Length: 319
Image (cartoon, rainbow, N blue to C red; front, top):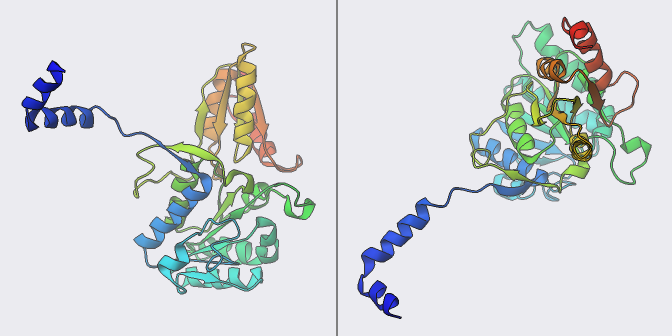
């Protein structure tokens, strides 16, 4: 009681001193953000930053998107920036490509990338090839985005991974994020890129929360397209993956660590351009390589990675 009286007599100076110590002693903490909310943040920030950016697709406006990725954007930006389209992928993808050629920066959402097969002529022949065939005179700054790969109970027609499909095509950049920071930083970079970008999300990852650093919470946060990230350090075997399969690799690495096997887990982030240097550097250390993906085994992303490693100058040194 005596110490309390003494503290109260000391007045405002003591109180302000305590507050100053508490304020300066608490570092900013990372926050939990789902992949869905990270994508929403990226869209919101880029729509606000550049009036040339707009979003179109099925149910993206009044319904807030089939997976609620565009939640709240129609109310904020209106009909001219957030545009509901008919169920005609070939049509609205073509409109988006034309808008990109005219100087706008469209984000074309496919409700699932399986439906992009209806629009693949626009994606490949109109978007991907124009910048190249015009010798760089006609950029096509467009992002094709939406859920990719297998989900729960959606049958074979809605379960395909298009990473190898679009990664095969010159003129496209192909991005496949895993975490919330991946989703936000890479989508913002894709929207600002002058090349057409295929942005492959995963339906089963939308609701997964990740820690987002203070840096990633900034409106200026960008991640470079074409750079992989080491998610776990190891020296016995390299696991290379992208999108949801990164989670499985980290789970496997945790199990193997109990047996004394330390896995290095690489999150590719980008399919094209492929960060072969990051993979080669890791394999030089571990001398073992396993690729993990959600696509079909023949002519897949993993096959390309293995071919790059075997054709590389360090193959016979490693193996």
